[in-house]
Image (tube, rainbow, N blue to C red; front, side, top):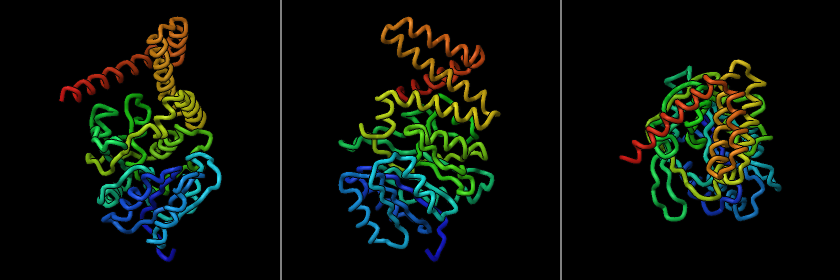
Amino acid sequence: MTHTPRVTVIMAVHNEARFIVEAVDSVLAQSFTDFELIISDDGSTDETPAIARSLAQRDPVRLRVLRSEQNQGKPFALNRALGIRNGEYVAWLDGDDVMHPDKLRRQVAVLDAEPGAAGCCHDAEMFDAFSGHVIGLFSRVANGSRLRSGGVEMWFDPTYRMLPSATMIRASLLPPGGFDERLTYTNDWLFDIEVFRQGPCIAIDDALVRYRRHDENLSTRGETSGVTYEEALMAMAIVTARYPSLQRRARTVVAALILGQARRAIASRDWPRAAQQASAAYGIGGVLGLLGVARAVARSATRRRRVRAG
């Protein structure tokens, strides 16, 4: 490329033939035009590669396609794209999501105005993939409250979630190893902790992306299979090993994760397992840690009740 774009948009895809045209069109239609789009295909077996190549022919200067013949996992696909990115800022878009036309412009303006920020995020409109029915704002559905600006502590709040497709970061703060390829479902969580320990995240209180909800969402598959729990523990172990100053926060998250398993055991009337999990959570988090988890869960429950009540 003869021109270095200000923003790199990375789209890691796998079997997204149904949605990729709409996703790519939403990037190419941005009011902010100084960007490159890298589509990193992770061994798709449907028409995704052919569609991606066809789309690239429409805008060969700004759109590049990487192709892997084998499915090696989303973090691998993301790292391949990061390896050739040129942008000052990096944004993500899943192959089944859709950008609002002003998404990039709004995020670039925030980061230009806040040089100390590591990145920024915004809200998303959740909708059902098959009916098109609008479910609600991601922040309200997932958290029961509006997004908030803050530091790395937000990634250790067990009741708070943010959407990767809604995040933009400074490329200068990318972790040296990129995404941890050992983690399939929680690699973005660990990645964000590594980025935002270096500076705050600024929240934009508007929905600038449409988030398509369906059974094939990566997070949905992870939650259904139970793998997310084990990977979350792995992510916190890595955080503890790399960043001792974050150990206390990581231990609180681990206690919350184990308490979640205890609640599931209680729901299935597996009392011995519930007792084991509760004891383990106490041993890891201690009284203060468990009180912190309880307060966070109580606040989340209150917010969710308010959302349901309108």
